[in-house]
Amino acid sequence: MEPEVESFSLPPDGNIPNNALPLILYRHALPPELRSPSGCQSLFARNTWGGNWVDGIFDYWHFHITGHEVLGCVAGHALVGFGGDGGITVEFRASDVVVIPAGVGHKRLGDKRDGFTVVGGYPPGQDGTITRPGEVPLEEARRAIAALPLPHADPVLTRDGPLMKAWGIAHAPLSAGSTNPGGPTNRAL
Image 1 (cartoon, helix red, strand yellow):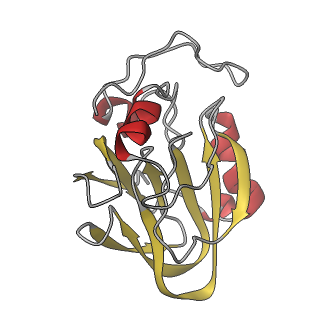
Image 2: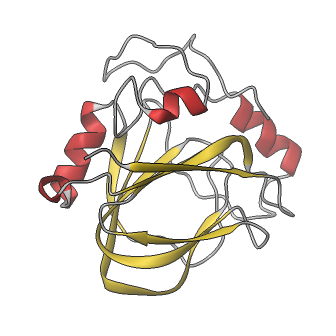
């Protein structure tokens, strides 16, 4: 069964830069055999999204200027905000995956339920250094985000996935060790 895919454009919100690239939400993306930390990590790694971790989502607004981020929910559910106070609220459930463009604010809203657990990851050479609104001047954040290479693959559906089309990414060589030094960058800001 193919996941249901939704995309959301999130304009800047106060001290959260957000990104002109859309946030991509995949509903029912993880079949039961991938709904574990190791299963989800394996899927992301096959599609060159590494730096994996297993935890929850912070309950304060934060964003990343050092990487685009994928989150896969492997257990439970929680309300998650994206884009800042003027953004969107999503019920993020086991089997859902979201690709968060660098700069897009996100936080868990309220309580975690039923053992809410997510697996996170990043494209090669990127990471999830936490930035809180107001910690970095917006122009500096925008410059850092614009310099980031775009991923080589959709973390769920490889080189033909919806991320590639939504972000305007041409097929690039798929290699887990590549850092894409000369690849396309996020110039859409």
